[in-house]
Length: 448
Image (cartoon, one colour):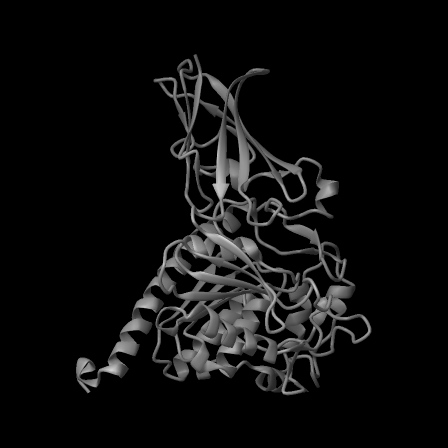
């Protein structure tokens, strides 16, 4: 009798699984398939044909498919290669996660012999570990969701910032909490009670969030890291320069090295060249401001799916405008991790990552700086074992058909490798921060 196993069957989303079939005839070809209902219930599916070995076993961690949704050996290939069963509907519902956002994802795995289903198994991916708690935050004008890890005592903290799609990034915050961090997913537009647009976002809002975290969470050794994606990555770097004493470390996913205008997440009444960020009532200078070379033509007139990066590259031709808008990252007082993709369709995150790393090196930055640039990956670097196939989408604010760039396999590699790097980076940052505080409290300990 054919068997199908998934090990472990129920675990955190970042845990790889062993999917294997047994009890087959030597050399028999079978199909292993997956289906997950994501977002508002849209099925995402993948399938591949495998040939059993001499013992009648198929092991996805060892065997490449003969044909199917992905190629090569990939233990979780039937998860990251999933695509919407109804692609037309996916334009409106491209959410990779369940509802509510931090709910477990349940995948049905099936083994097919010919037209018959020979065995099934369930694979459950959790974003919140046992004991993680979720709390809505509606204090001091803040709009967000706090995830707390299990256990008493102080925890290091992470402030999670979304990109130009807005909203509240609960999945990432839940996963941070599952690994021991008090994680606040903070909305700053397209969230309840907030503006629908990024235009004229007040930096003081984030200053208040950092103060709230110190006051209410009392993080271990005062450690607060910023974790931002895309515009959130730009914002994380910017905040760390404006409030260096409040930020212990920065994780910048596909960030900008310069300040950008509101772009396609703008309030239509203010336009995409209007400011995204205000500080002390004044716009922070952006790269489009007074730019002699910038043009939206490669975006507006380019073929679909559009690549927003083509327009950004025109703005980077004006060296004076770039210099005015550059984020002064040399003011950051902690370690920095930069994550980028070489085929980023949204903006040139590889180039931006190099700009930031080079500037920090030139300034003799005393803390760790790491830049991981993933070859062939695009803009959507998330975390392991989620689908990476939906490279085209309709932007949630502008409504334009776009591409985030990359390809499924390189994107899947970036998801997995980046998350390993983030976990290692934060663990080291927390330890060094604690050691630094101890040295300052006891000068004899540091030998000074």
